[in-house]
Length: 333
Image 1: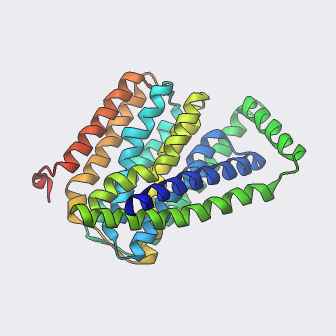
Image 2: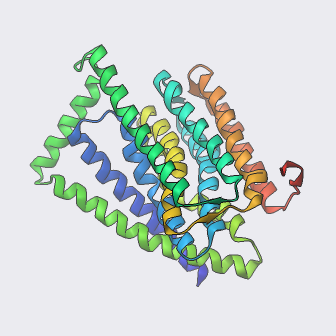
Image 3: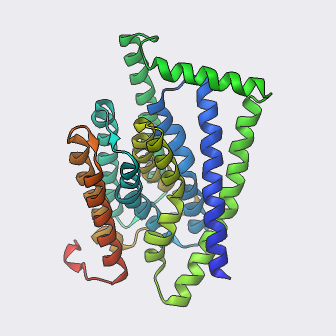
């Protein structure tokens, strides 16, 4: 029975995340938002919805280890598994504007989470501060893009994407769809995420108790990979269609959302107690993944297939260490 809950939860989370992404992208096309911001905010918000649903449900059940492990594990999975999988399909081009702003923000939020977690508990006050930082980041990104568009000229700025959006919206109109259809996708996806999160958390906790595996370990691996399925699907499709802005923006944006939005919102359900084991090892792996990916992106402004293999190997080593109970007490403060 718990295995059926896991499978059913993963299917619902994957389909729910896909529905939210589809509705959000269609809605963004009507609002004339660039592909980079679509990836960073619209797609990232949709693909981070499983993490949000799972973490809030886990906190409400008093399972903070599962919630925090899901956030940390998803961020590690996004950088060492999801992004390189996309690069294997087609080398991912990295643009300077992504590196100059959004990678810096991802690095800063990761470091801030480690400092915040060293206190042992993250309450609603800290959670509200995280959500406030997210609001400032979104505002800054939109303002910066408007300035950049004005400096290069609206017609010159991504003309091909603008034409594609126009054709897409015209097609929707011909079929009688509009904003109502976009919100229907969003609502349906939200419902699938709610039930998927319940099934996944309940099944994961039951399996953990049967196998004698900690909730933290389940959150860092099984649940983290499961809730990263929407990101994986988005990155693979974006890489296949040679839309690197959506692929890179979706991963970076998802990692930022996981820290600022998912953890921030979860604290309002209940104060989140941080397991010292997370601070002593897993959060440093998350930070290390960020520091490894940055120079890979700086190399020829892309992630090659060879670099993708290295990242996947590192993720395999992390999972091996996680499930073989290696002693990392030397990292404790």
